[in-house]
Image (cartoon, rainbow, N blue to C red; front, top):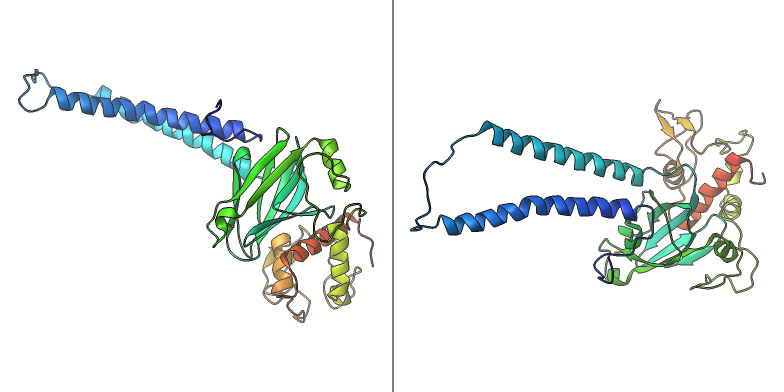
Length: 330
Ligand code: CUA
């Protein structure tokens, strides 16, 4: 769009298709609105009271014209609907492959956690040319994660995980906004998404950042060895919170084993079933009596108030790692 700052930069795979649809919609609207407005003005002047315009021979009905103005807009509208729906599905369907990042929103900041353990605030470092899958939750009110250059926006809700994805197409620093009014400092709740070349990103991950902006989380000092991965942090929590006391790896404990749990369909006591996704795991930790697994007594205490959103995500990563058999079994 040249230097006109009306349109944000196009920096993701969605940017082009979203803009094309937007311009086609605008063009179609103009195509109908402009002639109608122009004719209203023209006829208002031509047939104003007292003008001597020719008023004979007015057509009272024409099936051909009526059919045309019904059929043509019908197909145009259906076409636009189909096109928009396809793009929507593409944006909402998470790609099977990609890099995961966990986002926790709070008044008034964005906290990001990488599975490899790096944590950042109001910044998100990602590599270019790779799908990035976000799993997001808020620890207080509703926020909304919006990166205009990626044409990507998703609400971030308390108590419920939402997911979104993007694939950046060029390195750079892009503005991140909160677009859901969330209190006093809503307007300044933002940050940057820093898109790096893959090798730069690897260096950033390994804690030897080069180039562009960088912030080292409070609990790390420069030169620190790589932080513990989320799964390792989750494993420590699993021990410290005492989960391990009941959830044995071999399934012989008072609670069900969590090995292979993620993604599994679980039989519940009331005869229902539930898919053990990330939301199920979070709910089971905070409100264990809501869904009791068939064959187990309802003895688990709630961990509400004892565990942060970040820690819940670490536990999920740990349980996911148990699935893959990559976590050392205690
Ligand atoms: Cu967070 Cu507005």
